[in-house]
Length: 152
Image 1 (spheres, rainbow, N blue to C red):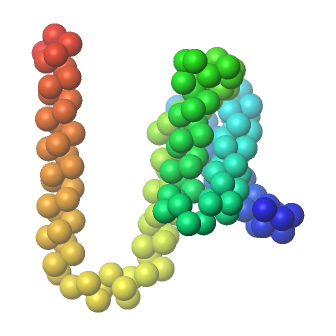
Image 2 (image 1 turned 90 degrees about the horizontal axis):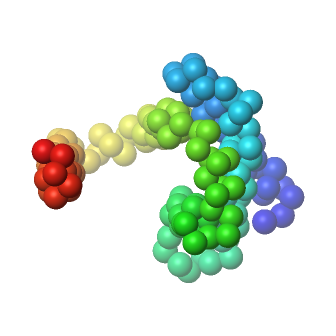
Image 3 (image 1 turned 135 degrees about the vertical axis):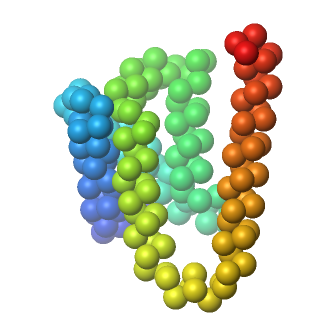
């Protein structure tokens, strides 16, 4: 990644991280200053995932999958940096990260309304089937796990 690409990516990533910090301050009353080290780690993981995506263009994984994999490896108990990584990132509320993501998803859908209109009414039926099956599948797995643990 050259300086221009880094700068362009940073112009997108830094406002998103700022929105995450603002969302957790407003929604949860958590201190944005205390979450700054975690936000810095988040920034590094995001940049690293974008770089890996550039290095491996033939691997069919999106950048968010690489960032998930990096975070998973860094947070595993046998990772030498897991304690530091977890201490820094635990100060960031997961739900606060979903607010900007959903806003950007809405904006991206709004920019392609013509494409959505061309899919016709069938997309509504397919969406409802997918949402319902995902919900029922998650509920079934949760039911099994809770019964196995003796909670219910």
